[in-house]
Length: 399
Ligand code: 3PG
Ligand code: MG
Image (cartoon, rainbow, N blue to C red; front, side, top):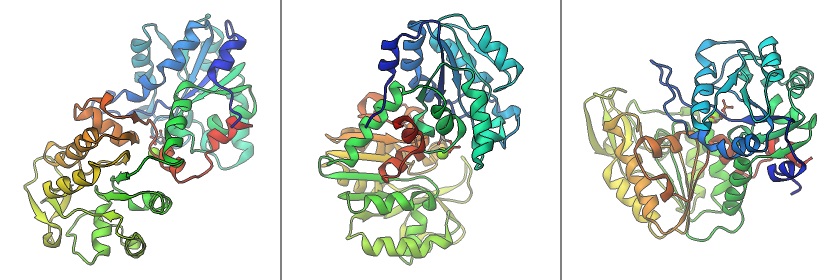
């Protein structure tokens, strides 16, 4: 791989130069208050930003937040992120209220050496995510005008062929930031001869998002443990009734086919916590998977499942975990995710937690982050990396 790194850029000297940094500051916000509920992604980019500040660069940070539809939408403003980033850096972050307009131009022009600016949400501009090369290119031209060099530290977005990820590096000298380098280094350990047993735990709500990675991982892994909302489509494929649980009907046949080809590597829950409603205070019970009542929905895996999964994890030497086992945000349905997370930390294994939700779960449940080998900031990105796909953001750095 011929990727230049932040250290190469620092060695050239960046004092007084404008360095455009693509970060993934797409943090979860509280729906009521708008407060940042997990600042892990902001912290993860501090090593890169700190090094640039230290070296006297004029640091221009850009990011997306959520999925606004190509126009300004106040609920997705990066303004609270600018405040939090300033607190963590210990110096104010100059916030531009647009991405490439007057505010951005004057904010960037006014930066002193060693100061940091954050542009407003990239996705307030249709050009960022456009499938049309010319439209993306025009937006990339505007962004590239704010930098003399480009650093990609947005690992969580490297799987997106977006202007700030894919087209800007074609326009500026470009390097990988510390976070992107570390993520790729860790994930490449999982794809090239992982130490065995290699056990993967997948959860989360959508089977359709995970099918490609299941396909890609099946030949490689020793065990694949499936929980979370997605397990119900697999249980249905086994001929079980799943009540009103999450179900992707058009995926049942595919899941059946995967189970048939899995040579017994796939482990599914044997018990689940079912509730009357999707609510924190809903009445709930633990039932066997062949006894899910028709009017109830599964919101977590049960204790026997946790014990079985923990037994499968215990001899592992390599573990990858993506996706919560249940609705961990509600205390009544958090035990499955907690139990699996604890089992992962107890195994004498190199463990990688992939993804926004699972990483947030680790922190929300108060688990010790340092007891995991690596907590990735990328959900989709880490899955696509493990699938062996070409990631547009990485490919753009290689050229
Ligand atoms: C994520 O949260 O997965 C990344 O920030 C990418 O966001 P996206 O899935 O909206 O492109
Ligand atoms: Mg995503």
